[in-house]
Image 1 (cartoon, helix red, strand yellow):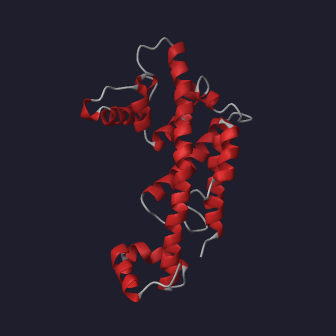
Image 2 (image 1 turned 180 degrees about the vertical axis):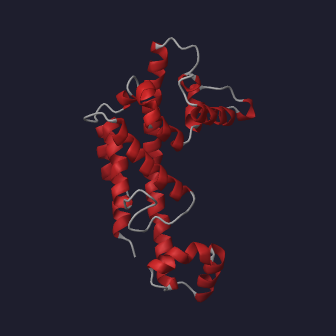
Image 3 (image 1 turned 45 degrees about the horizontal axis):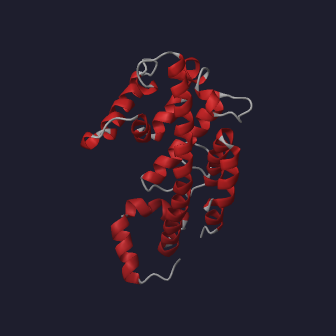
Length: 223
C-alpha cells in the first residue's frame, strides 16, 4: 500500500486533516506512511462490511415487516403496523420522517417504500425492552425462527453493537482498533454477530454469506 509520492502524502494529510488522521498515526507509532496504509485498509474493510450490511439490513427489516404485518392483521388494524398506536412517540416520529421521504415527488405511499426508508436504528429500537410485551412476544420473536431460546435481549444487544459499527462506517470513522465504540468487540466479533442474527432468521443465507463475505480475507490483509 505504501510507495506514495511525497506530494500525495502532503495532499492527503491536508485533505484528510490532522484530526482525522490522529488515531491512525497513534496506531502507526507516528509513521505517516503506515498511518495512511492503515487508513486505506480501514476504508477497504469498511466497504467489505457495508456489502454484508446491504444483505443483512434488508433481510432483517423484511423479516420484521412480515411478522408485524401479520400482527396488525390479527388485531384487525385499519392502518399499517407502522402507524399503530402501540409504537412509542420516538418510533412514530421516525415513521413520520420515513413516510415523508417515501412520498417525495408525489409518489404514492406503499408499505415497501416506507419500510425501506426506516433507518437501522429504528429496527434496533423495536427490539428494546420497552417493546417486550407489545411487539416482541406477540410478533417480532417469530422473525427469528432459528434462535434457541428466543430472547429479545440477545437480539437487541447484537443489533445495538451493529448499529454502532454501521454508524461508524457510514461516517467514515476508524474501526481498526481492538474494540469499536462501546461494544467491547473488534471487527471480527461484530461481523460474527451480524452472521449470527442472519442465521436466526435464515441459516441458508447465513451459510452463503459466510462463504462469500470478503471481510475475513480483508482482515487478514491488515497492514
